[in-house]
Structures are given as structure tokens and as C-alpha cells.
Length: 79
Image 1 (cartoon, rainbow, N blue to C red):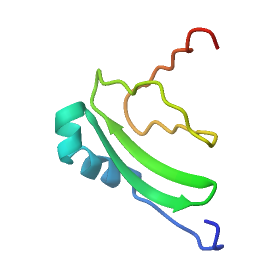
Image 2 (image 1 turned 30 degrees about the vertical axis):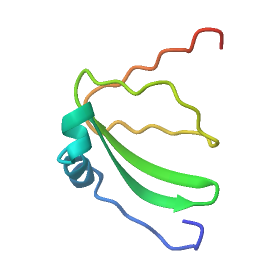
Image 3 (image 1 turned 180 degrees about the vertical axis):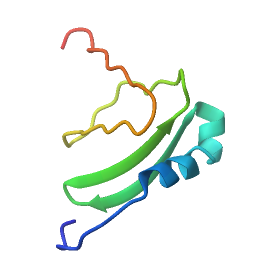
């Protein structure tokens, strides 16, 4: 991405792979880092139905793309 190269990802296949990781079985969440450069990290996160991600901070903006299912965001109290 920073090097001018074009990157293509088979997101549904990668999501299936993330859902087979031991972390997915244990916590309902499997993660794969697709790109990691200064100022940009691209993660694929597979969440089991009913799972949640705890509040956390990131030094960068976030974009969410839902491949399958639904996701809900809740505002943090006091924000």
C-alpha cells in the first residue's frame, strides 16, 4: 500500500481461516494482520455470533467492512 503495489485479498476465505484459529475457539475472535506499515494497519477480524470486542484505543482511524452478518457499535459513556 505504501510501496505503490496493489494488494488483493480474498476476504471471505481469510475470514474462514481466522475462524479456524485457536483464539476464535477460545474467545470468539480470530484476527489476521493483512498489512502493517507505519500509519496503517489492516486487520481482518472474524467474530463469532454474539461475541464482542472490548473498548480499546487505536492511534489511527478505523474502517469496518462487514462481510457476513451484522455488527453494532455502542457509544462509550462520557464520550
